[in-house]
Image 1 (cartoon, rainbow, N blue to C red):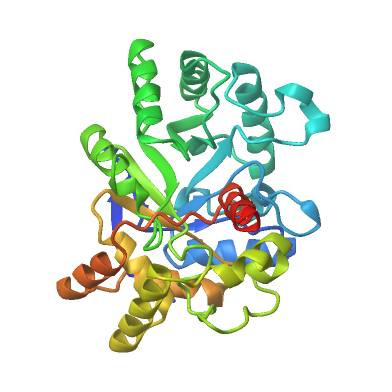
Image 2: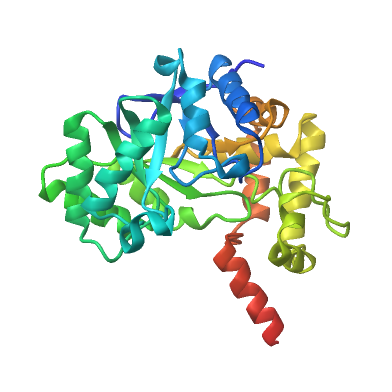
Length: 344
């Protein structure tokens, strides 16, 4: 199935990317050959934006960057690729310098990533998370060094609050560095936190938002039904912590949002995943949705979502039922919620 969506500028840059990016965060599931095949199919079917990270893994704890590197063979010019730096790599590899935004760590990890990717440059290099222990000038000078060396083309950040993005941009301005063009954060009908400060900031500074988690850890994808057991072998079923949290999940506004997405899916004759993803793309601040999949069949919903046009009345209805939602299904959030529930 060929991508029928638009190719849009990433932030205020001249770089054009598909509104759906293939995410290589496979959660350690598929074997190498299967991961290579699904990435290859995405590229050959018009998805030109591939998102990766130096800590993402496939089966046998192999790096996702290796799978992406194999998929890029003979196709490098068809793809705009990202990778990320800053999260923990193997602790026994670098000790206390095995993570963060230091010049030491960034300059070391770029060469490791380029080797695995079998390319001489990364198009958009993203800082995976803020590092409060390193001065922003040091981090941004290191990223600018990589730009000047030709090892990366553009700079971006992940999981930054609005003020942290502005701090990074200020640091780049002070050292006369190329400003970052993109940020990657979660955004979906159950978590609309970005609208409060990040959307206005991104619009003002011309930062493109790469939204991930459009299906809210799968809860908006149709597999999880309020009042019914979770599917076996699903993400929520595999984790003891998430299994424990699941019975407390479908309450109040969450149920209303899921029901509305289900209702819209019947109206349009498409999957719930397409509705949830298409809603995210209705926001002009969002350059693209990062969507992951272990198989091509799973990824087809994301491709179709880019061409789905929701009626304005339906967009407003989804806006209404999800107003104020801030549900965050990251591990720290779920851990905190369960601790509170057990303490009651």
